[in-house]
Amino acid sequence: MGPMVFNQQQEVASKERCKMVSHTIVVNVERGMAAGQTVTFKALGEQRPKRLPGDVVVKLKQEDHAKFKRRGDDLHMNVDITLKQGLVGFQMSFMHLDGRQVFMKIGGMTAPGEVKVMPGEGMPKYGDPTTVGD
Image (cartoon, rainbow, N blue to C red):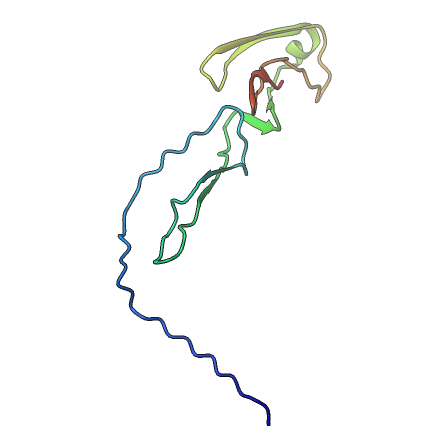
């Protein structure tokens, strides 16, 4: 028979103590951030004796909105119009997510299911808040 190796581990009470501390973390969500992006707080996680504390990672979730749907940096909104409005055109206004009143004027005929684009009325692009989607 060859040599036998025994490995026994036992957790020994440490003389070092870690405090249980509650922190309030303020998460700064930057303009243009989307669902699934993360914000990391280095070394704010659980700490144990002789171990480095972990990170706290916050993953963003996006709530559904009653009027708008986000697709990338673009915002989509469905509008029901009458037959007359579809044939001769119409004007309307709506409240944007940032509280602005946006006016829209559509002249002429609108086909069923047609998409009208309002350039520059979408979400800000992450990392470049001066550029916005449609």
